[in-house]
Amino acid sequence: MGNPNQTKIIDVDRFSGAIDHGDEAQIQSEDEMLANVERLDKYRKAPSFIGALDDLLAKLNSDSLIRRNSAASSTIENEQNRLASALALLSKASSTLELMEKRNKDVEDWAEQKLRASKAEIEGYAARVQAFEDRAKLTEQVIREYGNRAAAAEERALVAEQRTDRAEAMLKEAESRAADVEARAARAEAEARDAERWLTHISELISNNLSSASDIFSKLNAARDPVSELEKRLGKQ
Image (tube, rainbow, N blue to C red):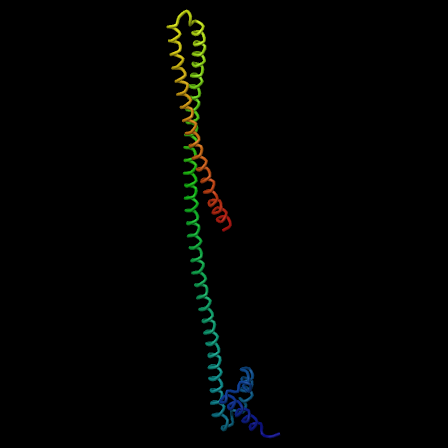
């Protein structure tokens, strides 16, 4: 079977060589090393093993702590790097989010300003349309007044004609009165012609005003389309 002390010496040499060459596959776990130490305690009375075992145990404990500390330090460093990367990514995402929120706020402010300007422009066009409508109503009122005056002139002309007929019937009796009646009839006809000229002039003014109002209505309808388009776009956004 051999000397058990010699067997333990061979095991110790194997552990020492494995540590020196960094062969982790041959290094036993901490529990196994403690078990070996306990088994080797009964041989510590041999003077030839005491110094060698003490040196070996110190070396094993030192190397084991170094490896464990190195692994823990590496793990902590990796976690710190990952944490730093995560914090950097989070900071970048926060900055990007703030920038996007600012851009969205700027777009909303711009759209609101444009919408207010468009509404103000529409209100301005509406005021102009109302002004033209008021002018059209005033023109219609003037036309009615001139129409009444024309009707009165026609009535006066009719009366003059009737009086002229009566004057012609009474010509034989009063030639001087007939001449006066004819003069009045001539004046009535002149007034009628003046009234016709006034009506023609007013009709031309009305036509011109209606044409201008039609152009304004067309421009207003054309100006409303971009506003509707802008409101649709803002609604989609």
